[in-house]
Amino acid sequence: MNIVLIGFMGTGKSTIGRKLAAKLGMEFYDTDQDIEEVTGMTIPQLFKKHGEIRFRSEEAAAVKRAMRKDGRVIATGGGVVLNPDNVALLKQNSFMVCLTADKDTIYERVRRKKNRPLLHGDMQKNIERLLKEREPYYQVADIYIDTSACSVEEVEQQIIEAFKAGQER
Ligand code: S3P
Image 1 (tube, protein in one colour):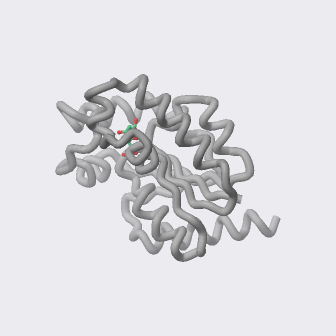
Image 2 (cartoon, rainbow, N blue to C red):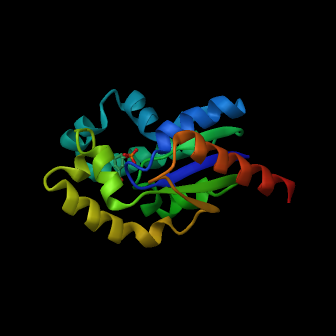
């Protein structure tokens, strides 16, 4: 069984995923990090040089690599759910957690960072637009956790409890 974290940018997937994996003694796998390692480029470089379509195809390949092994905590990029093939693969033998946050919290978390090409320009507007566009795509998880007002430890605890309860069923 893998634990897969999906959710919008800035909802805490990588931060929480890394800690959760350490706590559960599972391997941590981050699809964005994998893409950067495989392509030898940062995500912004990849978008700039080759565009979003190429990024999405690298992302689909990273999802395949992520799911090759069992017992992992897998953090994904916010747009991974846009491709139904990714969703189908990620849902196989996994517990899928969708992390959420309100738009102001997301903005506060991402505003000083320049590593998210899709938010370049008017960040607040872009966040609002993408959140709306993507809402239906995130409705594929086993549980949803709002991270806006929770500490990393609290979110971790909620995931662990739900994961264990799911396994006992
Ligand atoms: C993206 C989210 C990013 C990264 C890329 C595209 C998206 O990951 O994969 O910039 O489409 O939402 P995070 O969700 O980790 O920021």
